[in-house]
View 1 (cartoon, one colour):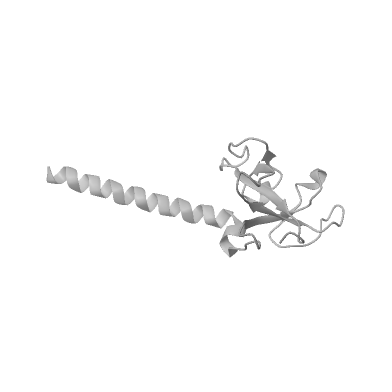
View 2 (view 1 turned 45 degrees about the vertical axis):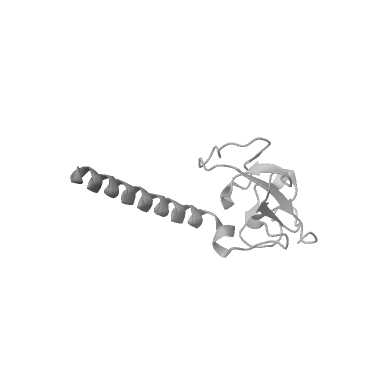
Length: 123
């Protein structure tokens, strides 16, 4: 009986350690999360992208200009489902992954988040 308790405790410790490692790895992959950059309304900035649908593959960890058209990049933020415009991948390099329904990113397998684009004047 004592061996079973020890094995159960060991299993819980291993699972906890694995979850903490997974959480740390996820934080490394989400640039906006690491800096904790927030909009004025409290939404987390994940990346900056071109507001033009044709240039949604343009992305940056910092504000700037689209290299295709010169427009100011806008913040892609994780928001509530009430405010969302699309479900998107929270990875910087997958800013182009956007869809109308919840699911997983076809490129990395992460769960898509409710997101919207925020122009500077909104912040």
